[in-house]
Every structure is written in C-alpha cells, then in structure tokens.
Image (cartoon, rainbow, N blue to C red; front, top):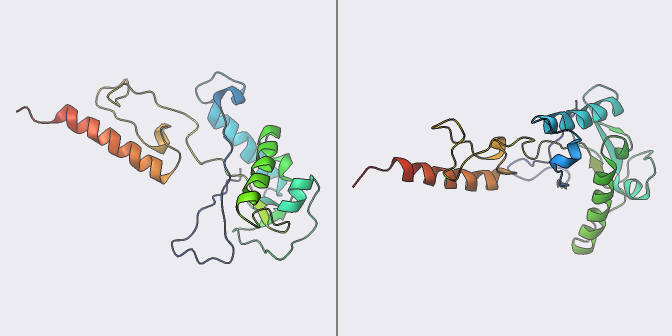
Length: 186
C-alpha cells in the first residue's frame, strides 16, 4: 500500500509548507472485534491509495479546491507537488472512508477561517497518512506494566500516544513509575 507522512525536514526550508490533518478513528469504525482489526483497517485504505495511484508507490493527490467541490483535478496550479516518489491526480474520496472525507472538508473550511489561505484552491492534498498513531493498544495496569511482569509498553507503538511529544511525555511518566517501583529501600 501507500502511506504518506507530513513530516518536515529539520531546516523547514522546503519548497512548500505542509501540514497533516488527522481525523479520529475509533475501534467501532473497524467493523470487527478482532484485536488487529485496526491494522487491517489501515491496510485497506493504504491498498486503495496504492491502486488509485497506479500501483507504483506514487501517492494520490488532489487540489484542495477540487476536493472541497467534489470534482476531479485535471492539472496543477501555482503549487507544485514535492512528494517523492511522486503523485498522481486522483479523487481522494476513492481512498478514504466517507466520514473521513466529510470531516476533512469541514476541518479545511474551519482552518481557513483561522489561517488565511489554508484552503487555497490550488494547494495540494496528498494521501493517505494512516500511521499517525498505533492501531492497537497494549493494555497496562496502574503501574504502566503489561500483563507480563516487567514489561512496560509505552509511547506511540504501544497505543498510548499519537506523536513525538505525547510519546515523550508517556515515556517520562512510565519511567517515573518504573523508578518508583525499583527505587532502593531506605
């Protein structure tokens, strides 16, 4: 499948600005009680994006104005794509769930009221970004320990964070609990 990432290089000096808009997805959206249903949910939409863009690891893209108007894009505007290995003009509604499309449209409109130009018609939307946080969660007790003694799952991969900062905070909180547990007796 195809997975994109909205990261920026450390200098933030790329040709285009970028941002990721995340839409909440709940286990009820997976239509399965299986513990790995979230993984399959991700893979389903990644496969759709891969097929939509021609099965060559390019990503589907659409101009923001066309996305909001629910029409296919036919060419680029002032903003030129920089995603590597490349993009293909394609309707993003064909590689994301309907409720995600509707939420994205609402969010883009709202952000444009706060950040002038956010919904610039010839800006580019590229998808899909399905790996913002883990699709599974490893259960842990009040001491941050899993059901395996001495195992302390933490951060994004364990399902307790959704990015670098929240992973760092979860790691610090978990480390504090480990330090309390193993502190020398006075």
